[in-house]
Image 1: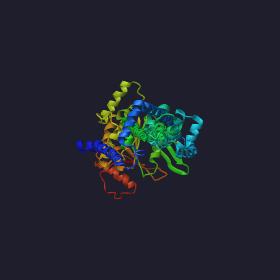
Image 2: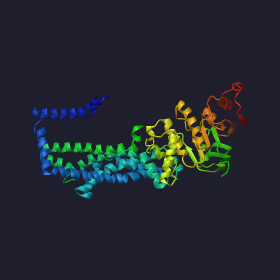
Image 3: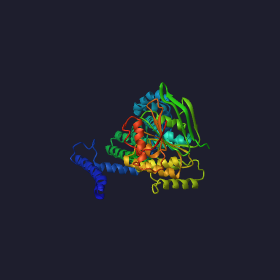
Image 4: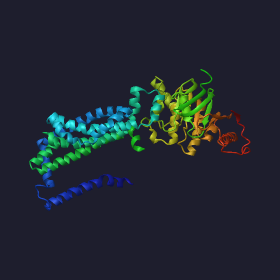
Length: 257
Length: 252
């Protein structure tokens, strides 16, 4: 592939698809295929976006949502990785706890919304709780599986060269699972972003989820679509940020074999 | 230090009802290169694990004198560490940073991988990776080198080259070596003594001394003769006249 072709393929084609989508959207609006009240036109959405931006509401909602995701996700990672490490090394504990962990892993975090409100009220705490419930179990399971799957030869070598305790953890166990953990972080960060929107729709007074719910209640479909676009773009951006972790030289081996 | 860094006396090892090794006795003198060959699954790796101290015998005695290093069958390099960091693992006992890096550079020169110090294992070929493994094991003041089919995952030509490389490295850094292999050519080309094991429970079936300086050509008559003798002993070759030049001394 020549340089020119690769730019066409990686940059221009995706952009062309976006432009085509907006064109179809505009055409449907101009032809009035659907009523304006349920299908806002691109210019109206753009105006709504600018309105939200000027009032500062969009920025406040964005910060509120990002804070909740960061807090809930960080809490899930900070507790999930140690639990996963422990379970990965203890077969009995693993056998005992796996069914319960699988149960919670497969229980939609949204099912917790009533309890989240009952226990934590409205605002940051219920959203953080729900994000935690969404991210914690996948992080535990992935870390556990990664630890249990570390080739035993690495531990033999660690023993041969006198790596014990903390050194073994930081120089063998953690780096050995890092590629898989990073992949899981990508998946669960995405999951957290999905959950925060739902949590804020019901248990929030601000945040992007609340913003689109509020727009819907006010019959402002233009603001609703503007909010949806922001949510989608931020979701992609979050993933782009986390994917940078895969570029760390000492984890490249996990993606190139 | 004794002149016999490894002494094995009537060592047996069973796993449950399965007897893997039976009354193995072996004395290995300082600087000797011993190759242990035998059918696959006969307990060669078990013997190596006993020699390294990783596993304990069910009965019998093993006396070990000196620092032991092991080279593994599969990739034992840490893929998250660079060539330099992997080799430095073998020099952890060197407290002085400057001295440690000097010795790492020295090992890089020995394995002829200068310029690759900051590469990760997955960026190297199989042969280069195995050279880094050897460097890690030979770094520092180790005395005994245990090798578990170290070249079995390499292609044939690379394997031939690695044998020469190993002979050259041992010439610069002499060690007492026990090489476990199913590759009889490898054993005959490298070892001072070839120990042939029986099927499980493994016993020593045959020992062959090969008194010839390294590096040796694979087609050297004495190497070919040794291969023939071992294959005959294993019941694979039958013609006693096939090799008359082979003059390996024989003992049981």
